[in-house]
Image 1 (cartoon, helix red, strand yellow):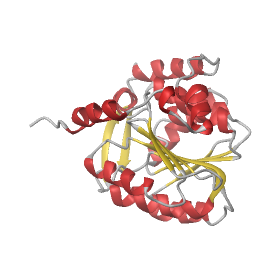
Image 2 (image 1 turned 90 degrees about the vertical axis):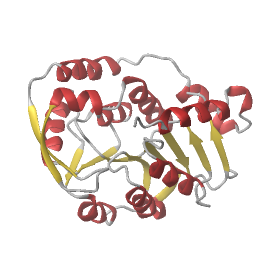
Image 3 (image 1 turned 135 degrees about the vertical axis):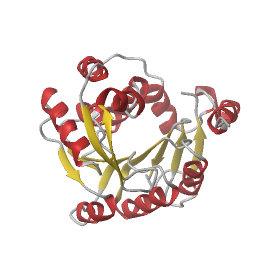
Image 4 (image 1 turned 120 degrees about the vertical axis):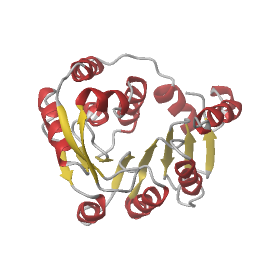
Length: 260
């Protein structure tokens, strides 16, 4: 039977989602106009999308070690063209991530889930001066992404490869704060909540946590609902597939469901 969870949830989202007139927070109002709805076309977008087109027509295959949503350590050969079509962040969402990084100007960026590096590049190009760490469970995917980084001269990105259970504690122990974390490496509730709580003590007052695919499954939606209840999460924004969490202690705790 066809899974109707996402279409049903999209209808529920549309019934709740507000536009600019329903936003009373000055910070969220500015975020809505400068990030969520800003239609500007930055020159950095074109090279990334040209790279995407090249990968879509690639005949290469990669032996991928999948440690993600299945919860199993599965290795299989996959076409690059299939990965880019099914797993890479779409252009609209990539542009949103670029605008978000450009708006916030974080000092450091952590990405959980590199894949082929399309989302990495969108975020990196908005703030190349930031310390950027991207983490990936599959060594083959990470190596392929590194080639893409070199093509677009994103040479300062640090790659961390391996199971997050082993690599994440090593990354975190060397950090005193985080300004920006993109969670896109494991689409299971338990793992998502675990990663959230690992980074939570490091969240600066300017920090944002970005969660991808918050309605990918019922358990991912459950994880999102649990996250927005966290007292330290001051402003949370639901954009249907993306969830944003801000930690500025001077802001009141509010949740927004916004049109995107």
